[in-house]
Image (cartoon, rainbow, N blue to C red; front, side):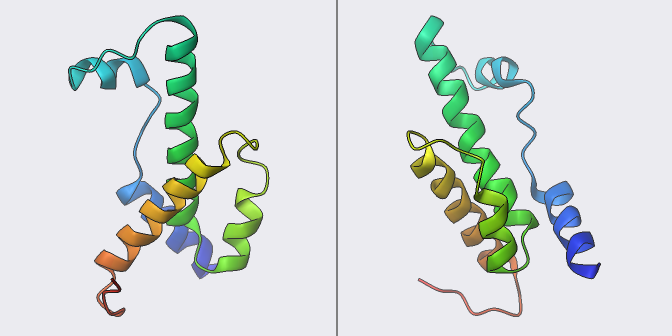
Length: 102
């Protein structure tokens, strides 16, 4: 129960809202393209952040592995793991009880 609460709290505090993808692109001055390119970039972005958010919510490796099981197809699995890596690196950096790993 504590692990579930901890995971949700980390997601709430450090998660990235990506619902307004076009608005975020416009704010950063980035043009996401048109048609197929825009759709692909949006899918990749959502996949990276799905991995990032899964890492924030996981408190142990086994639940993380289970959570990742159906999140990405073979074409986007690398982007999913990139997001997981970002999330785990972030957690390592902010955790005062763990030594920094390089």
